[in-house]
Image (cartoon, rainbow, N blue to C red; front, side, top):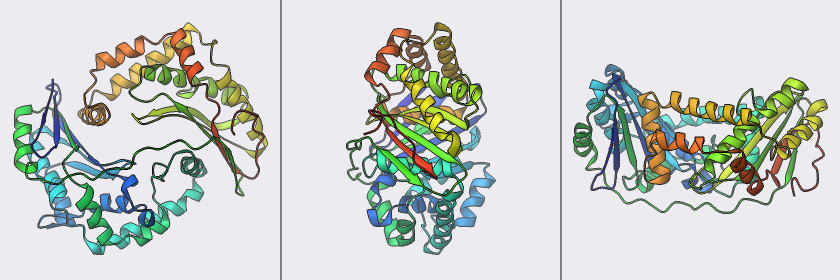
Length: 413
């Protein structure tokens, strides 16, 4: 059973009672994230998220860590493109203590100045290590060129922005954006909603502040081919094309269509590019969406000698999907999506995260039966209709390697 309430300070509290488990999990989402960083300090939000766990109230970093450990609470703090997040898992009878410590981090973080240099050092090393992970680097580079600013920022931040961040930058982020309005606390597990609501009011009811306006998503850049030359024994190919948004009727048609292409070892890209021709070591296609945009991304990692054929075959598979899907393929794709959904939703952690995500995007929680019914309703005709509306081209393509490839006219501008 799922119950929701909204505290007077604007914090939405969601509780899913799961009597068949002995654990509980929490997930907190707060509007903000990488998009609210100043251009000169892009990545400051990453440092801020790391600092949240390094002392709160009258406890320093070590004492706070010991308090979580003594209660058996595994916790983590992070930042996404448009949100800050705090999550944790624990034995259910420690939930009150978890909310108490969570509230302390939210309302009274120490944000110690002397911890910032070590965090900066690690983050700068992560950015430098991108050169050793060309697959990830290629996607970061495409993201910068495909999405409108500031939604095109790297999840690693920027070296210059991280280096320029000071404690003043961090405290300004905290003051402006770490507020309860539009924030979500989602809890799932062996809990009672009435108790959770009482604890949330006790520990978080005094959390105050009005949220600042967040940047709005702009317009996708004109589609182009971006050949980035690097000296490498590999060649990375990534592509992105517009797709259906999260709240649009054809959302599940899009999920199934992209699954048919590349979500598993049965996807057409894997079979045609890797299994039949042995052209690559990795290939996939994915569908991602928010209420602001939808995107189909695809990736193939190969050698320079096989890169052109890999791209050609991948584009041919995208072009050939409409009108060629069999009932067997469709049934398998739908079964795989539902299996992933069901298995992923059985734990308190998954349920807390899923409920928070639904509320964040939709202002409501989708029951599993609704999602399953929407997947079941996908048909050969609806997949073809989706592809007609979102034909995978024109698209943006980026290659990372020794030389450029030939991209057919009409694929990228």
